[in-house]
Image (cartoon, rainbow, N blue to C red; front, side):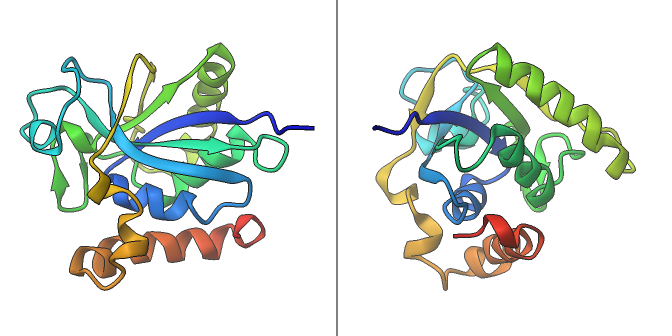
Length: 177
């Protein structure tokens, strides 16, 4: 019997951070860093960083819903980034770093909207996370894939990515591979 895998597409700042976190989640089969939500076909990293394409840095997560639910993926999402800062995460500033959930179907849309409303009480500022339909996902260049795993001692990875992975592991021990 083959697994029925599903996809989730999330943006919470730099895609290296989310990729590193979700690669550690039980039931996640694959995580691909990429771009979504813009108006340019086949954008490059330089194009997206210019802020002119409308894309966000995102990860597309392929997961087994029999092991990890979409709701649980969203709980992780709300925990490992700040959904109250428009167009920024820490020192990363620009529309490409916005907090966004790109839903793949109406079930994901309603789950995302319910989840956002439920977690709002945990934040002192309004959640600015956009919830929008996924129209197209563009994988990022090869050198962005598995970045944290390949470059754990890079300064950005040490200062920004590693603390998010640690936070995930502390809060979600039961979901950690």
